[in-house]
Length: 304
Image 1 (cartoon, rainbow, N blue to C red):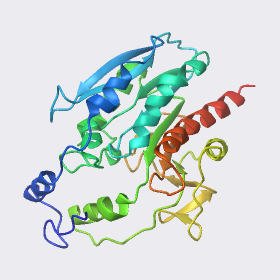
Image 2 (image 1 turned 90 degrees about the vertical axis):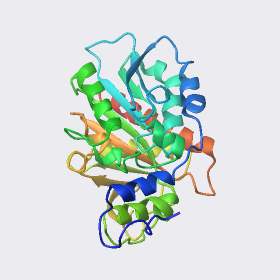
Image 3 (image 1 turned 135 degrees about the vertical axis):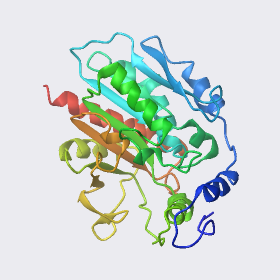
Image 4 (image 1 turned 180 degrees about the vertical axis):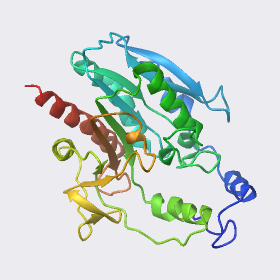
């Protein structure tokens, strides 16, 4: 469903148009059942932190993160975030899967902070934006217009003073990006929608200002054991020149992206393609876990 018919062509949406858009959203799945219930099974190796709640429905949308119980200031800190775009399912479920089954075996080497579902309203409504038609993943800056982003930034400031060694931000690129969300973005901003191409496969978005090419390659090498890496489209992915096979770079801080929210030394944004006929939902979740494992194993190799 495209939203280009909302508003006046060539003019940005006003508040009435945003309310029109919001009225078309509906709850399609349960944050309580699919996220919070699973988080009850996290081991005592990780301490649960409620770092806020969404004003849209505070009791329904508590914001949950987990921090290594046996924190050691001498260890590097790893940040893992999922569901910044709530509709990107494997980002959420992959973060939970890693937290439940894999994080403990890396606890001797790293501290962890894991926020599995940054945008629970977006998760329930399968949406990229929050109810105010704001994209949380373009809102990681001071005085953020997205309360999802502001709450996560405050958590990182309070807990680690934004000092993070590596950040894995787990995302998906879906067919609905071109069928729904990018047309809606163009309409919201009063711009013309130019159709793009969705890559068939997994790829990574690194940081233009700190690309860490070997780190990105190690991640893709591990993910390739689980699912296919996206081939480029004439040297590009989603209209951006590739840096290497399966990797493009964005200026994360300039764009207000989640991956640029801390003073990290390494970061990556994963992009799983769940609509490919070649993959299952389980493979998508496994690919997110593989991305984290590939990155962590690379970081460990630096100190051998």
